Each structure stands twice: as C-alpha cells, then as structure tokens.
Amino acid sequence: MPLMTAKAASARRWRGLPLDGLLVLCGVTLDVLVTHGSWGGPTVPVWLAAVFTLLAGLPLGFVRRLPAAAAVHLAVLLVACDQLGAYTTNTVQILLPISVGVLARTRGWRWTGPVAVLACAATAVNLADPGLALTENTWFYSVGLIAFPVLIGRYLRGRERTRLEDPAPLLDLLLAGGGVAFAVLGTWPTWDSGRPPVWAVGLGVMLAGLALGIVRLMPGAVLLLESAVLLVADQYVPRTGNSLQLLALVALGVFSSRVSWLWVAAGYCLTCGVTAIVIVDDPSDVTLFRVIALMAMVSAPVAIGRYVRARQAEDWQASELEAERSRAGRLAERERIAREVHDIVAHHVGAMVLRASAAQYAGATGPAAEALTDIRNTGHQVLEDLRGLLAVLRDPGSEVLIVADPEDVMRDAVSRMTAAGLRVDLRLSPEAARAPLVVRASAARIVQEGLTNVLKHAGPGAEAKITVEAGAGALTVEVRNGPGSSPAGGLPSHGHGIAGMRERARALGGRLSAGPAGSGGWRLIASLPLPAGPVDSAPAQECRWSVGRLT
Image (tube, rainbow, N blue to C red; front, side, top):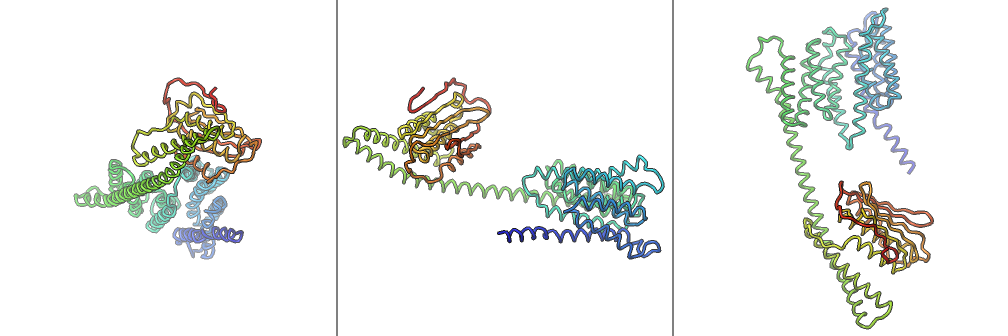
C-alpha cells in the first residue's frame, strides 16, 4: 500500500510536465516573435538575445506550481532588461501581469499582495523615461496593469470556491490556449505599426485570447471585453482588428447558447455595430450587399449557438424522461417487493394470531393469558399496518391513509417495553402534538425502534428516557438509556435498526445520530424539520407517560 501511494504521488507530480513544457515553449516563441528583428545586430548578439529569450520563457514552466517565484523572477528580469535596453522588455512586460493574475487565482493575499507591489514597481521603472522622475500617469498605468489581472484572478478564485461541479477545465484551457495562439499569430507582425508600445499591444492581444478561457463561465462579460478590445485596436492599431474579429464571434456564439432571445438580439446588434466600425474604413464603401454580408457573417455564430442550445435542451429532456422511467421502474419493483413482503409477513403473523387465539380458547390463564392477548392484539395491528402501507404503495397519490395516532403508538410502545422489563419515561411537549402527521408518525417509529434497540442491547431492567419536543423549526426525538441491570435476552437483530431510522429521518430532510452516552449507556437523537408557521393552533398539554401510567 505505501508503495502504491508513493507511485500515485509521483504520477501526480509528473502529470503536469507536458503542460509546463508547452507553456515554456509558448513563452520562448512569444519572445522570438517580438524580438526577432533585433537579433544579430551590433548591440545584441544572437547568443545574448537567446539568453534573454530563455530567461523570459522558462518562468512559465513554473507559473502553475510556483506562481510567486515566477512573478518575482519576471519582475527582476523586467528591471534588468529595461536598464540594459534589451528588446525582451516587451515580452516580460506582457508575461508579468499574466503571472501575477495566476498567482492571485491560486494563492491568498499573503503572497499576492507583496508580489503585486513588486510587479507594480518593476512596471513603473519600465514605463518611466530614463533619467526622469516617475510621473502621476506612470504610477496610474503601473498600478492598473497589475491590479486588473489581480482582480480577475481573485474573482475567479471566489467563483471556483462556490461552484459545485467541475466545469470541464480542460475545455477552458483549450479555449484559452487556442485564443491566445490565434490572436498572437494573426497580429504579431503589426504590433509595432501603431502608436502604443509593443508590450501594450501584445498584452491587449493576450488578454483577448485568454478571455476565451472563461467564455463559458461569463459569456456576456467576455463578449463586452472582446468588443472593447476590437474598438481600441481599430483606433490605435488598425491592422490588428480584423484578426481579433474571430474572437468576438466565438464569444457571441457561446453567449447565444446561454441566454434568451432578447439578450441574443442585444448581443447581435452590439457585434454588428463593432464589426461595422472595424471593417468599414470609408462610409462611401457601404452598400446593401456588404450590409447583408456583414449581418449574415454575424448571424452564423448566433445560429450555431442557438442550435447547440436546442440540442442541450433535447438532451436534458431525454435524460429527464429516462430518469422518470427509471423512477417508475423502481416504484413498480418496490410495489412488487412490498406485495411479497406483505404476503410472507401476513402469512406468518396470521398464523401466530390464530395460534394465540387457539391457546386462549384452550383455557390459558394468568400471565400466559395476558401474553397471548397481547400477541393477538399486536398481530392484528401489524396486519392493519401492512395493509395500509401496501395501499399507499399501490396508489402513491392517495391522500387518505388510515394510521394510528402517533402519540398512541408511542404510548403503546412504552407500555409494551415496560411489560418486557424496561423502565421507560416518555415526555411529549405540547408543541410536538401540533406537528404535521407525517413528522409525528416518523417520530413514533423512531421511538418504537429505539426502545426495541434498548431492550435488545441493554436488556430488561434498563432505564430509558424519551423526549419528544418541537422547537427551532424541528421536532427533536431523543432516546437515552443507561446500562441494564440484567443481561440482554439475546433477541434477534438484523443490524438495520439505526440505518432504517436514519433513512426515515433523511427522507424528511432531517438527521439522526446515535452513540455511547455517559455511564455506559446509549443516546439516540433525531431532528425532523418542521414547516414554517404554525400547523395547528389547538391547545395541548404536556404529556408524560412513565412505566405504563399517564401522569
């Protein structure tokens, strides 16, 4: 077993290595795309550029496991590259906010806070002009570039804690990776064609691609983000807008598969407007054919999204139908089993009642006659209960169910256990008598089974105290007993008593626990929820039933 555990731990450690290697490759490739024009020049030899490229890309291999170390390394490297005038500065400035965002998503504020401050300082050094003091705008952009990914990371961390189901993280990872790859490969030759610095354009492109990783979680927010990136790109780096258009269309398709037609129409109009701004350079180029073509292009992801939504609805309906059929099959099987149990138990109990009656007519007297009378009456009650339960199983929708009063059932159980040698004290609070019938019936059955367990395991002579009271939105049943004064009688036990009581409590949304109590006894307590508001306003008095007498 320890060897298997060690192997499993080793497998978990090595499982993520291919992904870490892929991240390193992506980081190195990004720096090569950004800095390839400066390689081999008089100021930057090829070997030195390769060293800077490796220093920028290698930290991505540790960003999942050691995000704080990766972010600190990139912050220090950013300052060093800025002082040396290396072109790798642009790459590091793109990767630093991403690593800080990963840190905020996977770690607490104890690590995120100090590393974010260090990253802000390194970004400020990079943005400030050499030899000039840091201006107010420099600090604003330095803090904003780091604070934004930190806020996103913390938000995603909070969402992960509240989710109950696994949202297919591999698919989100593939969407994010595909979005980044498409955005970077489609726009990197034009990163230096606009007014913003290369790192700013690259960071915006990376943000637009990474946003697809949360498009299934927040499709509306991602659609707004992609639209904003498109507008900014068209304004400052026009040649990148066309390549980023596909990301907005993907976001629109996912958005269409998650919302109603009203919101689909709003998203469609937004995407059509943004696409028109990006594509149309001269108003004189607008023709009817181009307008129809643009609307048809934007309609394609909407149609795909609605088709996916319809298929999901069909699958859900099919699963619900299958579940309903399964439930119907289980109910039919339970009814069949109930009939068989009824036939078997009714046969043996009926035979027992007939023999007890025959013994009475044969002239039994004294304690034997009392025992035979009790056996006959108990058998009749068992048969009536079996018939009533079988009627309910045959017609679950029936509202008419003739059952004994739960309080009478509990008092009867106390009387029988007292006759068997237990000393029982039953206390019923006035509020308990106003609880719903189904709750009181379950409480009565729990009391019955609890007393039976006391007789089985503690034996005659044991003292049992039963308390049934209502309060704090629940009906509480407590069965507490001390050690028996005589050994248990060896009554048969099938071992399902507590499990059956716990299942009965769980069926009503309650809970049941049992365990040893002080002085060698046993304590069983059940809590059965009550509906909000009073069920019955009829007055009731506290009832106490002790050793077969009502006091």
